[in-house]
Image (cartoon, rainbow, N blue to C red; front, side, top):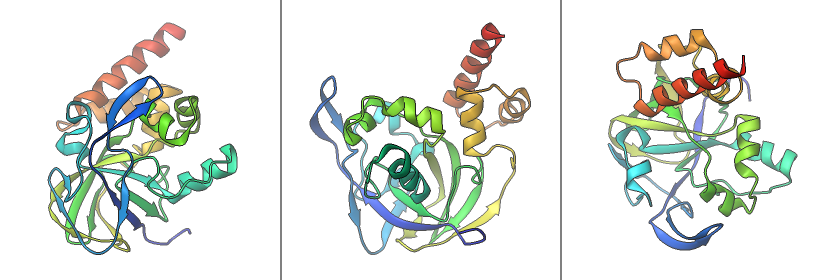
Amino acid sequence: MPGSAIRIDSIHVGQPRVVDGLQGEMTTSICRTRVSGPVQLNLRGLEGDAVGNREAHGWPNMAVCCHTLDDYRYWKRTLQLDLPPGWVGENWTLENARETEICLMDIYDVGGARVQVSKPRAPCQKQSWRVGRPDWIDHVIKALRTGFYLEVLSPGQVRAGDEWHLVERPLPDATVTAVNRCWYHEYDEGLARQLRKLESLDPNVAKMLDNAENRFTRMA
């Protein structure tokens, strides 16, 4: 709803387990379960949560994975996938949130914690397995509905229903959708320049920008 505060609709945690994936056995924490009541959010993530691949996901700037209820409504409308919140492995499912309105480097106070939006989530085969769609990655990239990660600046307790209070927005043009569009659909030199000026820019974001620039330059 326009003008309504972003809030946590639900919180999900999980532990690594071995499953039969699309290409054989894989270890994943994507099958997270909903929790109620207050949960401690630490610098590395939520208490009771762990990632299946620490090399790929176990970094401080990937402490919390977020998706929006708006994403779930979109997938139901376009792909006829009636998925419950948390199904694609996010820690927080958000109400009144859109990736077209949330920016990289945004800082928010949520419950007793302070968090910063760090980067978009990259769609993967584990999500494809979870939703039962081998073509999932293509659909996510086409729609630019990837979800995004948070870094925890100050730990604290959080719970479902907590509202997000914007503290700082240094890059108002760098919405999650805009950055994804720059990566996947149309390279934006001005946006890339803004991002590259950040001392704290994630190396993987910089690499994605370089790859996008090279790819679209070759296509020109």
